[in-house]
Length: 109
Image (tube, rainbow, N blue to C red; front, side):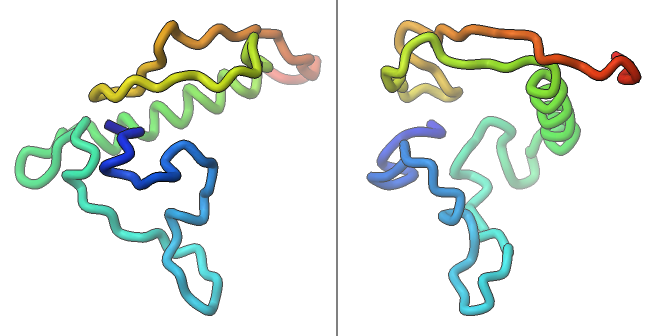
C-alpha cells in the first residue's frame, strides 16, 4: 500500500522529500498532516497499535546502526518492480552487496 499510485499519486516512485512539507513562503520544515488511515499497518483511531511509536524508534535505531556499520549497494542498477501489498514488496526481491565500513579503533560495538 505504501507505493500504490491510487493513494500516493503518479509520482509515488520519485524521491521528493519536499512532498511531505507544508507549502508556505517561510520554507519551514512543518510536516503535512496525513490521514492516519492512509497507511494502515499500525491502524488508527481508538484501535491504534500501542507499540507504534516504539516500533518507529526501534526501526530508526536499527536502520541507523546497520548503515553506520555497513555499506549497502544494489547488485543491479535496474529499478526494482514494486508489488502493491500491505507492506513493501519487490518482485524477485532486491539483491544487494553488503560491505563492512572501516571503524575507528576507539569505537565500541
